[in-house]
Image (cartoon, rainbow, N blue to C red; front, side, top):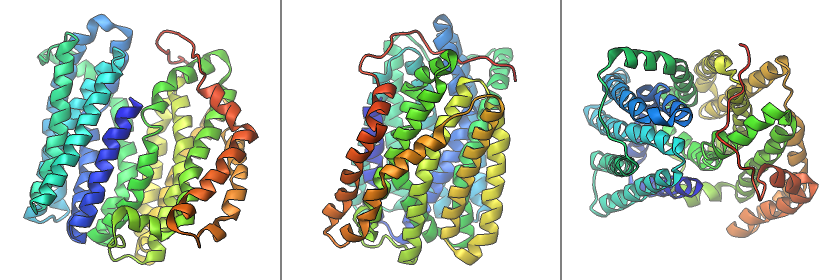
Length: 477
């Protein structure tokens, strides 16, 4: 699954790098903005259905076909209801007819992708993750090939948007083939009562996911309305870099391969050691790109996004945004650990009010600060919003009797990085690749021998325990 994520998301990232050099600032920013709206539509078209399908199919494998039929019907309804809302959002944001067409095409691609994501839930329940990996690889590769061909033929933005339909359709068709291979059919259910019960069950998870997506994407809408579409492109250049690192953890590790061991740790009382080791490892993962990019300076953005990477934004402002996003990466890693702990303890009711509060902070803060500070306002509120969520979750768990040692362990990793940060003023004067590599190379052995080696061996044992499916710890609300 991790390989599929790397190749799939890596191919998507490369295609965006190519488009950054091919499209004008306005077209590039416009494309990234409609993709952001599409991601919100993806959450709206799911509303927790995929997670319920995965959970129930894991517990009751014999009911998978009925669950799949019910989920398919509900997904069709939600997708068809959500698509007009997506177009309405574009209309309310005063998009031109050309941009509305691009938005519609991206919406169709998201529709296909949403069905593929639902089918992946069945693969995970049946422990057929190889099928999901193949689908994700094909999606990334087909998308990249389509983009390269369209660039070669000097296609316009509308045609380039169709590349996203190609990649999503490739994944959906392949997923259907694999579903048929393991004995499932795609026959929608027409039982209204069962559909109603499924929707009611999935709704809390759907609201949680939708609010989370809105929290992470709302700043893009404000940037477009206040600073313009070029600023959206510049902001997305920063976010796309940290999203590459996020895929290491979400969803392959947490909640993913490491989630069963986390559930067992809470069940057996070893959660402090487990979450502490995770915090030390994931903080180190966040520090590695921070050290490299801080040392390379603006040469890194130029290498990734081309000579026009500034998009009309001041170089120092954009560099500050990138550094703040990289700092936010460590916060998000810790937040994922704490959120996974909430899931393991069945305490997710706290998620919606906390994330909604953070969303209001991001919106209100940007409305006040963005006209004054410009694009760095989005980066400051990005860090503040995620830090608010992290601290709130941690305090809530501590109040419930679960004190996670994430701060102490993260601080130990940060201390191990001090020598690497100290040499950055010297490495900045070097050629690009030595500047990029020396600080992380210096950091790794210091971190390894200061406890990192033990943490990795504890979290990723060579001979993992062979146990059944993880069980969420049931605790009173």
